[in-house]
Image 1 (cartoon, rainbow, N blue to C red):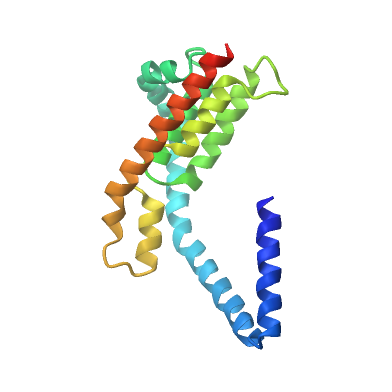
Image 2: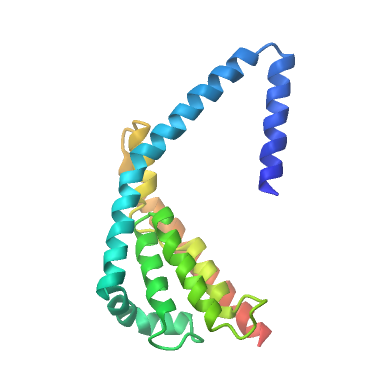
Length: 192
């Protein structure tokens, strides 16, 4: 649906530019925007590569399992249907840790692996389990302590104070997480 909306907006913009005589401005903007997008990707790529590499090392060394055991008391309250020692807990803990650092793109592989593990213990394979829904809510609204990606983008765009976003980001993500998990809890209780 979003693709359709963007496609329609793009067609409307190009059509308007053509009929208003601004087709050269559209051509220039396409070239400049493409270059800016590529430059941004190339400047952010090292951050993502470092974090993904560190997380792979943590996974291979067993550190993720230790983190999962450390967070188990909290995760057990949030995800009561996941058995202790399940790989999903390690991936969920990793996803939360990376999201707390504001690196949502680097957290994606852990989120996908967590969903794979949650699907293995899902009794109804055609329907998302409670744990899967709760994880999606937590992942979407996850608490961000240091919004690294946003800070990087602000630095790339020459912000006067790129770290000024930290406190508002913490407040917004804490409220979103509490609200999302509370709503998830009440919906789960109602459906039982």
